[in-house]
Every structure is written in structure tokens, then in C-alpha cells.
Image (spheres, helix red, strand yellow):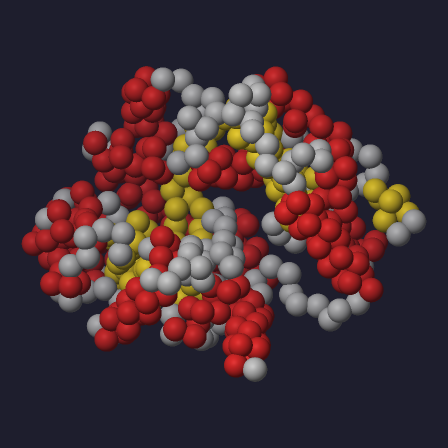
Length: 447
């Protein structure tokens, strides 16, 4: 995350260019692509030789290279939506009609950035990893498209070639049966992997913990989202094996973090089906007690309501073994205060459905504020999921929210990238900037 910079000529130039890009997007007339171009297409381009360029050009100019890349793409794809989404990353959204047009879209992107860039009168090559994904709206949604293109970008970084994914689907029933058949061997074949999303403590201004998220990189299907394979794992009784693998992998990854001097609690999502599984509870406790790492389990409200007697009893067993308990997606299910007060939970996570529209809704702030007050009364800390804007962060800070999690802080990262993030994160500056922005806005409103 880029630190705040003192305004300079270069910074002013960058702001002007951002303004022009915003105006271009705002003034663009919507087009009807339902017939000619029904596929949703997205690409991520990430500068991969920024270290070399930084030594040649300096920090200030290197931080603006992503704008040069965006300008080049706008020039060759004027009908696409181009946005800078990170210090080194550009996102391109468009529509294509079929697989052939998807290939042409990817080729156009690669050709656009192949030639050297004129940077202040000198020619420099900007090397980029490119991930592209597309598919018909009937087969994919925004979440799957975003996950697939991010995974394609990660593959491109590793293989140093553009990665293009055609997400057009086979029949859903046939596809589900095929996934069910492939799932049992996915762990043994090394297809499962973890990503980590940090949770930042607002007052302490530091990463307090992280959530481990399971992903499946299928050899022919590409990235499979948890929403597609977790229900299959539960129905085929593979969920206990998958969760035990996750616990063991988190412990192994925590050893790497400790080697870096980082010692944070990592939370793992636990299926409600497992809360009444005595064999799983016993094995999980054995694994945890054999190590001294800090682990937490995230459980949903509905998983407790399914079998409250067994769930509450086993959650107390986990707590007695030093495992922290967090209530996930609070507000998305049938909340029950009767069960809430019985749980040995130390953290309550507000579902992102209330956070995403926090600054544009009249009711969501009231719900979030009352939830924060309720959790504090029960001596629990509160985490807000889905924080994506500085305005939402600032408002949550004023409300007394303890921790935040979301794309504003970081997208989920594989362990090597997460270790790098933990060494270099600048969340304190982000929180301070959001607070200052909120106070300045409040003073303007008062004035």
C-alpha cells in the first residue's frame, strides 16, 4: 500500500491524469453488449520489474508508472474501463463475444505494453504479468470473475507468460458430478492451497490476525471457489479431512511467519457440520496442542443453531485448548441472543453486506453501530468485513469498531506474498489518513 506523499510536480501530474481517466469513464456512454458481446471480460496487469525501474528512475517516478500503463491501454482499448487498483496494478474491464474475441482482447493488451515506454525522454521496458478471464454472464458472477483473474495473474507471475482463462461452463449438473469425483484426491495431488487476508486493529494500527481461506486450483477448470466445492465436501464427508489439512497447513505457514518475527493468530473457517463431530473435535485439539502457534476458529451463527447443544459444548472444548472463537458473518443468518451469550467467543465479525453500503445507506450505520455496542457489552471485539473505502474505514473507526478486514487493506494473499506484506505493510498510515479525511469532512459540514 503506497504511503502518502508530499505534493510534487510529478504527483500533480499524476493527479491530473487520474482526473482525466475518471472523466473519461464518467462520460462514456453505456453500450448494449447483450447480443454482440455477451461475455464479461476482465484483465489484471501488474508491473513485475518495479525494483529495477525504481533504481533507475527513483521512487516518485516509479510510483507513477502504473499510470503510464493505464494511458497506453486506454489508447488501444478506448471502449474498455481502465482503472488503477494498486501501486503496480491496472484492471481492465470489457466485453467479448466468444473465445476467439477473448484471445484477441488478451493479445491486444499484451501488444499494447510490449514496446518500451518513453519515461521523461528515456526508453524503458516495463515488464508486466497479465491475467485475463472471461465467460458468459449466465455461467459466472462478479466474484468468480474477480477470483479467476487474480489467480490467473498469480499464475502469470510464476510462469512469466500471459494467462488467459475461458470460463464458459459445461452443464452445471455434470460439472458438479465431475467436481465431486475429483475432490477426494485434490489434497493428495497438491491442488488445494491457502490464501491469507489480514485483519488490522484500528486503535493499535497493526495487523492483529488473519483469516485463512481455502482455494482449489483444478488442473483443467482453473480456480474453483469455496462456494462451489465446500458444499460438495460437506455432502461427500470430505469436509473433516479438508479442514484438518487446513489446520496443519496453517501451522506450517505460521512457522514461516515466526521465522520472520511475526506471531499473529490465524483463523480457520469451521463448517457447522463439524461442530457435532466428536472425532473431528478430538483430532483438531490433538493437532493444536502439539504446537504452540496461535489459532482461531470462525463459526457462523447458523452452524450453532443447527445443533446448539453439541456446538456450544464443543466450542467450549476448543476454547479450553486455547483456540480463539470468532462468530463469522454476524447478521447474515438468524441471529439469536440466547445462543450468542452462551458462546465462548472473543470476536464478532459483522457481515460485509452491512459494511459495503455503510456510507450510502441510512439503516446500515445504525445496525453496525448497535452491533458494535452489543459485542462490546458481551466483552467481544468487533471486526468489520468487506471494508473497501477510506470513508467506510473512517466511519467504523469513529463508531468504535476494533478491527477491519477487506480489499482496502489487502486482498487474500498466498503465503509468500503474505509474508512480504507483513514485512512492508503501511496500515498505520492508512488508518491515520482515513481519520484525518473524516475529521476534515466533519469540520466542513459544521462550517
